[in-house]
Length: 471
Image 1 (cartoon, helix red, strand yellow):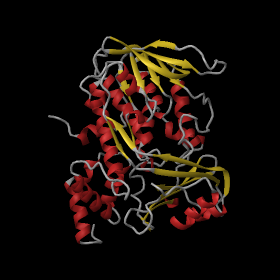
Image 2: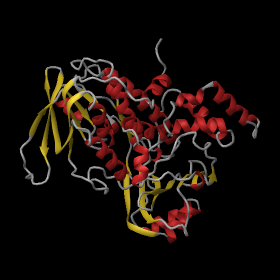
Image 3: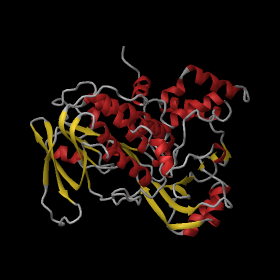
Image 4: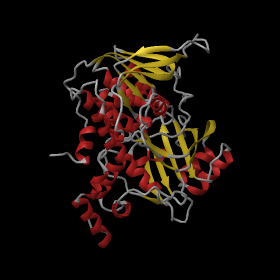
């Protein structure tokens, strides 16, 4: 019997740790040491004699944003499904992160507003903890745990291309960029039995495939035109006790479709975000930032922006689109190639799916490598599993983005029906605790979106619509 997408997603998102692994290759190479690359390296360490991670940014122990991650200073969220995977691959990770300064805000200090109305939170502990930190802080902890594994080695270099032997990827070319390296250092070629592209949304792998005569994966884009501004403030209990505050103004609410967030992060700081779309662009001007906090969002935003002590400057970021590269649709694909993280798909970051998707891609890689594959054949089973994760995140984010006035498709098959179901469940989640949990398990990537169409969920949502106040 063929497993459903929901069943496959549940297997991918499991917290159960693999117990049987075996060495399949001598050397694996991972391009990129962000979350996707580090997680892939961790999984590969169970199956390769040696894992090389090639990363152009020499970040070391720094918790500052890396040059190769321009959005690193912005608000990032690790969803509960991501916490589960980090603890799966690095036992005790959550406790270690909290001990190092990451926060787990008390539910009494968490707020979620939609169109200015406070939404009820799901029951305590129904989704697990909320691990909150800046992205560089979290990546540093993952990097430490990854590089502590004996057969993983980090090399600083800029990827320049891939080489093929027959119908497989067999080597990577890179230019060293480490300390003391000349700007024109000669290229180095490293042979590999498996290569992972984790170089992000600007990945050049598709171009390299095309240049070598291979078909390129089809690219899908949704032009969201998202504009971010984030600022750090020193925490002060006299100003606010907020741990997390998320606020969204939906299209059609009479307000500009803006989003904002306040997160209590490591170092006794608040990271505050304001976001707009299309021509609605937050600037690096502090007064513009404060005005947006004052006019568009709940009181905690105004209190922190007006009275908090600013640390550093207001930082901006623009993302033109959500995009996905459908490697699973290629009729021909070389063996020895894996693609993970934003290099496969990157979404509207306001939904917090990026880092969590990267952890789930690592679990797809583990399942593939534990299936006793032939590495001389394309990794189609891996790309088929990754598609399950990408489809789930893509549906949640792009269906919401299609409501934005400047977004005009592409509309997927079944859009009207899914929109109706999502709207029904969203409304019922405001009053029915069971529906609230189901809705939040989907948006935090613990469950597949099809969970919202289960009969019990739909019946309770319909009853709430017809008989408000009943549960």
